[in-house]
Length: 323
Ligand SMILES: Cc1cc2nc3c(=O)[nH]c(=O)nc-3n(C[C@H](O)[C@H](O)[C@H](O)COP(=O)(O)O)c2cc1C
Image 1 (cartoon, rainbow, N blue to C red):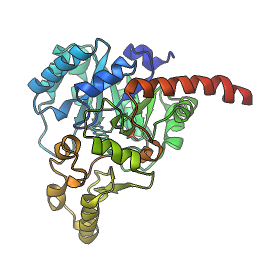
Image 2 (cartoon, rainbow, N blue to C red):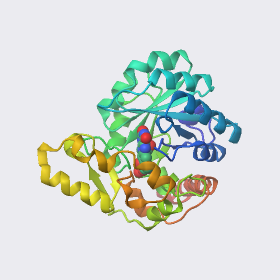
Image 3 (tube, helix red, strand yellow):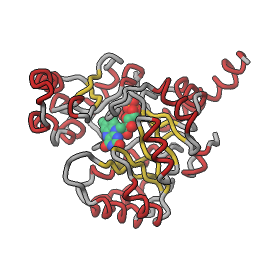
Image 4 (cartoon, protein in one colour):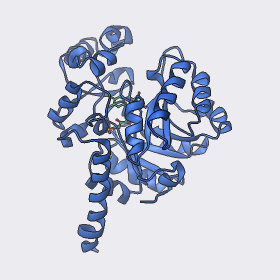
């Protein structure tokens, strides 16, 4: 399938694996890219630019297809060495960066000078338009359903995608809540030129996470996610667990008085314990509502082939029959 996204990134299928903290390692990114999608290494999971350079080199040994790197611009905390990370990306020959969080405006000159295509993840029309204005090549439109940070506007993809189609000139992919071929076709119908998936890719054979995490996603329903840190305007959609319930209790008790210091111990540094050791209750971890649609643990190639083959059948068959 050819879209402006496959052309921009030089990939076979318009399916991207979004950056995921402690999931987006070389194994994950290479598996998606080898399956014809775009695999993305999560930059900040690597403690330093040197570590990111090594991870890119490791990934290069596993695939000769295009790969990307996610750079998440975090709010509030001491800024990581972003220029150093971008240098490592450029030196590693990576030509695609997925930015997220705050606007990448400050780093656009450095990214563009290195010939890097930038896809910025946005949860609103106004942020998408800003991304277009500052020279991003594409946008990943992340609806309220998404795992991770859905922003504060709470607009689901059924509205957000057609709104972005009305306003944007650059291509965009649908992100958040996506996991199967029917949704992929619907996203194309609403103006997207591809999809970005997070949660769905965790429940694959190659995802470098503990089996407990994959099983938890398979076992979860669409009712099992919770929103945390709303009052801090750093909302995150996570899978419910004992730690999340404790955190929500603290949030309810503190109300508007809640500060990051009240929950720092519950949320800080928990990802390695969860993703590597499978200690699911160690803290909150991002997970999307799409968990309700995930019932198996295929290889990345099986998953991507299934989505693409079923989508083609559905466009030629069921949908054509309506025309
Ligand atoms: C476990 C997990 C960790 C994530 N970590 C990041 C991250 O570090 N940076 C980022 O930009 N997005 C992150 N995301 C968001 C994904 O890149 C993607 O936008 C999101 O998962 C899409 O929604 P979906 O899970 O419904 O597919 C994460 C998502 C998950 C599930």
